[in-house]
Image 1 (spheres, rainbow, N blue to C red):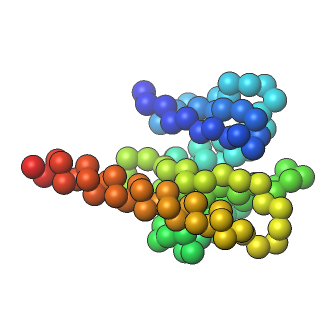
Image 2: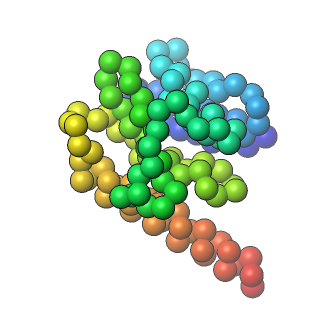
Image 3: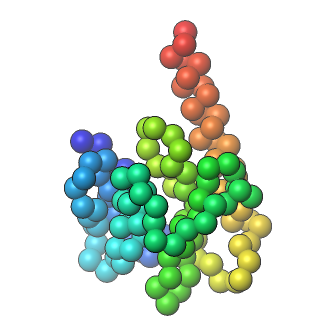
Length: 125
């Protein structure tokens, strides 16, 4: 079974989500499981509780909104068969998403698209 590791620096912990139906687990007890639970739903092909499309970052990119007294955001893309890509996670401190956060998400999305193109080209050879 493959595992995807999500590092939530903002929450001070690391979490692992299995690719199967196993429940998410965390490596520290102080971790708030909400982001992991929500990403696990995405991994199962379901939509999280609070999300919106982030077309400013790229086609097929979504923003997962976590409200725990503080506001957290996770940009992710789940349109590829091989898995869910977490592009960027950050604490949101203003009403509007900072341009720097949008640019980080865009750059990482472009990197994923490029890596997938290169992998496809290798397979075709």
